[in-house]
Structures are given as C-alpha cells and as structure tokens.
Length: 65
Image (cartoon, rainbow, N blue to C red; front, side, top):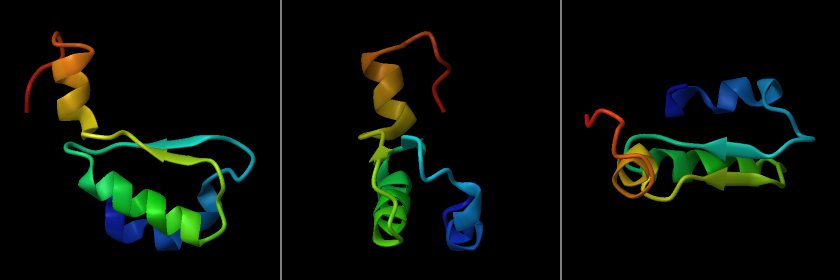
C-alpha cells in the first residue's frame, strides 16, 4: 500500500490485532506506523531496516532489490 493512501484506508486496518508494516528500507513503514499510532491504533510495529535488513540478517535466500 503506498504511504500516501494510508490515511484514506484507516478503516481497513484492524484495531484488535497487531499491525506490522514493512517497506524496502524501513523509513516509509516507520512513517506509516507513526501515522496509525496518531490515529489511535495501539499495537503497531515497523520492521526496522525494512526488507533489505531482513534479507541481510534473516533470509539471505531472498532476492536483492
């Protein structure tokens, strides 16, 4: 989901579940997480370092992009 569309899609996110956001490097997902927290969501997380860090530290079999 593009970062610019998060605000318009707030009612599509569950408020009773953990939300984990991720992007390529982690900056956009951190911005989106802050936006959701500001809107009253309470269990929101951003994958620090994004998919790039996940690939490097957890699953190097993923293709690099």
